Image 1 (cartoon, rainbow, N blue to C red):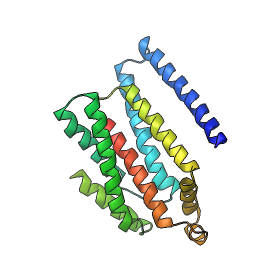
Image 2 (cartoon, helix red, strand yellow):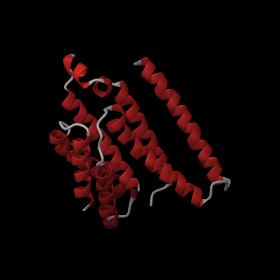
Image 3 (cartoon, one colour):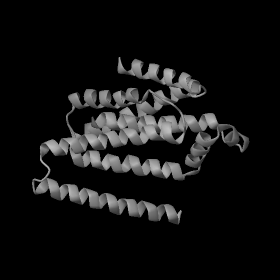
Length: 202
């Protein structure tokens, strides 16, 4: 517990330093609007990649449906934002999009995550295709920090360690009592929620 706290504090200090540096560069005009938009796009893609890395890199599941979960967040933000263009409505839309993405990932994950390899990839691509039918850089930066720290803490938790064990050797993980299907579904839902946040910010 103390080790996680030290790591989180170190990350927080580094991220605050990064935020301060970007703020100074924007305020003195070194980073103009073009560069700020590029930074926003980089931040959105970091959020998206962190969630996808949890599914593909850490749990070892080959999913092609991430863009669909991003689309749910994007549509939620666009539809609700067009009705009420306020920050409160935007954050509400982001929350609704994340919950919808998590629910869809749960519904899709229960039957499809029993599949392996190419079959799983095709199933998740199909889900993405079914789903398919202006923020400030400070907000993007904030959500990059939140999703990255949440993912790192997830990986250090007992469920995260179980996720890593599933990636390394699913049979060995099952032999020591890890419910591999449940772990894969949790990682899939978590990754879908981060994709939805990136979609809302996009």
